[in-house]
Length: 436
Image (tube, rainbow, N blue to C red; front, side, top):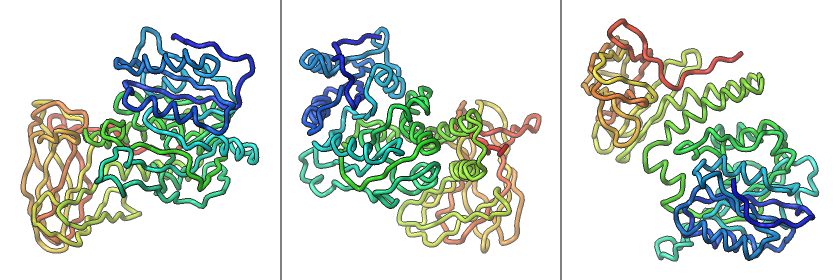
């Protein structure tokens, strides 16, 4: 680890951690928005996650210009360790009683720190504060982006202090409301230490959820104040971590990684609250049942509480008549090349119809893995067994039902993938988690 800067003897109230990796395009905007704050009791930890562009030089120039306030940090041998490890490095070297995070492609509004510190001092039980972020498209200056900026509905009452675990069930990824980006929230030092900082296993594509892993720990262990005030601009651009993961078709496997981690975290922390485990089990079930609709088609999933293996695809409209316009996916199955497999399931429909069943990659380039077949179903339950030879190895295969060439609703249950030789069931990489 390398640190460049001298620090003043008196610790500031707020430590700001800014991590960056090849961020030369936006880094100066982010740092300048901190320098423009109306509150001046801050220090900045600039953490270089192994950049190879000009951003290292930019960061060093700011540390040299403001040596009493800005510290440049990097990992040993200028390594790339990921977002969580880099945030933790900045936290370890920071001194403030409050810690805020400013991502290198975002900017703060001038009164951000002044208002957040005032709220923390007026809310002594608050471990963390977040407010409203502006999803910022107009930074491009492009005419087509002129009306695209928006501030998401908070989804929860604001100017309110929430005790744990209230926000766990209400904010993404377990609830409907929008979660705050790192550039929006500020955390008390003791609360940050109590949850152990950020989870360093969230590396590579999995760092899409590095902030979510941190936040769910905060929801479980700290009281959080939610404000309606707007404090930051969250820059939307195609090179962001979110955009890259979505574009590559990796969201499903990243979400699965997060759910597995969360189950392990609950066990490690001996959190036995049945309501929290029920939330996780529901998320696991939903993650393994994905409904995709295209072409103006409309469909929805219906579950039966007394039978978690049963799912009904209620088809309300089919506009184009293509079989792929409504697709039920079950991902996360591992397959091995040249091995024989059997897909087993039971199915019925409101009236006789056909659909297609296939096995394909659940990620780009979405290639088939050895099975795609037409299936005829009737109004009575039928058992189906379809055999195939896997064409390639894949750790995240999906069984998919292409239902979109008919508006007749379908019910499916007892779906299993079996290794035909020896009859062994193929365990998916994401499995239901048992309580207790």
